[in-house]
Length: 248
Image: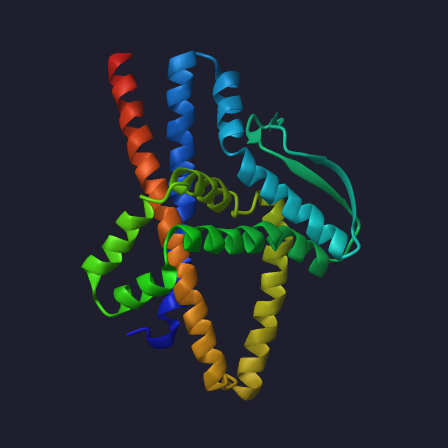
């Protein structure tokens, strides 16, 4: 029904699902460690250590994009800090000066870089070309066989861990989203004006096919990352409720 837009819609839906599951997983993980250690600071610190590779990629993406765009940077840290609001801040990069378009690209950098790394890691774990082919042609057993075979690789656990931390770090913080939201508002107004004046411009067929293939692969990469998050959420969620029941 969605036609060529289906891979894009699936990618957006999987991104939203991955964001929600990652938040739930973080809650369950910190809760489990807190119930075992009875120390809030230790629970936050252990969580920060576990996802440190993703935090490093996230903050480095901001820093590199700022440098590429010629925007000055200040303090760079990947050490967890408690904000005045009582929330845990995993890392930060101070950016000084710059225009809205520069801050938009700097804010989007983790999403772009972590998405690319997620695809590379997922492809090193799973032959995504074959997986997409089998999935699109309805050969479900062969697609699942590829997933099972990926777990037999000697470095599968390391790849899964890196894929988890990197995909978990692609989402933007409130400060990252602020310039992006403003830019999207301006672009939305421009696109509405173009639509009212000339309608929807036709996209070359080759572009449409390329974008469809790209988002199909992206959706598979996100799906693999989501599967890892769901598995971990189920494990830590079960432990959370078990410990909560014992503690009553």
